Image (cartoon, rainbow, N blue to C red; front, side, top):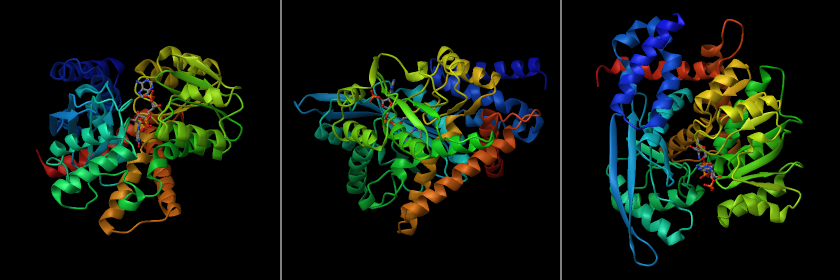
Length: 452
Ligand code: NDP
């Protein structure tokens, strides 16, 4: 297909998506990125075109929006908005995290749910795609306030989810504490102990390695990309953004494989430690972030050789490998230019859609190794899938067994991207590979199930 025809078809398709979903710019961005890879493929495979598979995939099967009233510690009434997007159940129950962050809105959750469908398909496990959350900000709230909020949210959400229907998990602002409070309320209201949420505590149905899985998986995926050029992590300078769940375990695994992680960040700025964030320093960060719920700048009070850069992102630091692990659109075209000019040759996304379209275009133009989030961060949901299997069987696998399975899944996702994304000159376009690789399985299931 020539570029002109492709552009015409893409413009027509996107005009309809934008008209139907006004103002939801992150959703438009995610659909556009996927449609760009898929439209030529669909033209070559008319069965998908006739059945309007892509058009159907861009429309959620069900969207639930609800009120979450709760009382703060002063006895004042607070009202948040809750969402669950049940995007696609062609290959399994809806599956995807809950995000608690003040920026949460319908468009952001629809982008995440749309990505989740393809990501879950890539894992090879039987999981459909969903996503949910609330504009609730857990920062600065007491444990009791977080609990009352989670209980109010679950009082409504419980009627829409279930272990064979829709299985939520964590995401930004939702970790073990929040999953615990939501699980407790679900169990109380439904009088059943089931695997309705993943990311649970080990004592009550959680899986070993689930907390580590997204960060470890992004590093494993990166390792596979490096191997295609005869490289590995040893001695490489690694820049990481974020300092939450994904960033922490990406730091651990990258360090374990011989890389030197020199940055981490939060929404206030980034820290740069040229000596590297070793295991002791990471233990300090984990306590700071997960227990004290403090800010990343406090790292520099403990380790004065490091510097804190207020209001900036870490992409101005010289590095070989970048692992964005904070949030969407955190690497723009200028950041990508900085990274590449400073010698960065590999980007593996722990976060969802952290690179803007300008940044992605530059990675592809310069032919650096670029693993998009739907492939590179699929280790988290894959291990959630393993948690669901263990819950169904009512047994627990050892950490070695779960990590081995996670590793195998990441290697297979990489192989699938290579299969669908290798271009005639040998360059592996992982964007194309992940989009087509994820699409085919869902599309074939939709064809088999008829017009539903
Ligand atoms: P956490 O809440 O544990 O950590 C998020 C981190 O990103 C924090 O350091 C936070 O800083 C920072 N951050 C959040 N929003 C912004 C923002 N708008 N600007 C700058 N920094 C920001 O979340 P996770 O680690 O779980 O998630 C990180 C990313 O990984 C997200 O994109 C998520 O969708 C993705 N992901 C997570 C999975 C999981 O298993 N947890 C699975 C797959 C993908 P601050 O504390 O200041 O807000």
